[in-house]
Image (cartoon, rainbow, N blue to C red):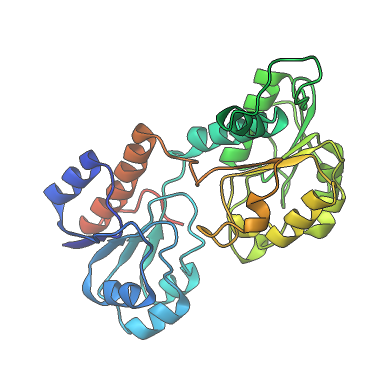
Length: 316
């Protein structure tokens, strides 16, 4: 069967794929264009896409009756795929849940600590030769131990973040979730997003992307935050109204932000880069070799199940 891998995966995954399929790999790290998506639906049996490969309703419409029967997404987030249009066209969609949970939660904690303790500012100060030595009031930040963390989205990743915060730093956990969510750690679900934003010393966003969460974090949400609080996003860029975040930071409505994702990724507004109390990472959430290998193996397991006519392990 013909398998298109939209961007090269770790060597061990590529070798396993080539041992099982007739593999085509695009020679670029950039997302697939609309025309490439249409051609892939028409010409491939299975496509293994990833972040930014926009399989839209328009792409499915132009593909007609697709040869492709499966989009085996590399990643847990699949908001770049119109799942409804895929199902209507007879194309299944899978993802890679579980494989990304701990790595993404680790990056959330990285950003929380870097932002709270002003690590990005300090690193830049040292690099430009501006550090003149230790003194008692130098670069004072937020001490996170014993503070309150607000988690927006209490799925696998949100719970992994909450456990790290509570058991690692003694933080109280409050959270907002669109439906009632029992969890196996001390945490309180609050009724509204505004309540979580107001209660927390650090807010961490871990909701899935998509139409239902687009601009969930807007000007109203940021206005509810405490002025000493920090904001972290490791979810999808467009769950945040980036212009509203920039305005809130400029107005001092919050103390800082740590971002791994951006609304119009990979574009990062110059206005955001110019704000000193912001930590900016280049979407490093799952960027560890063993994690990317695990994601690749999970995506490939879905491909093999499709080829063998078995139930898909991770349908969405």
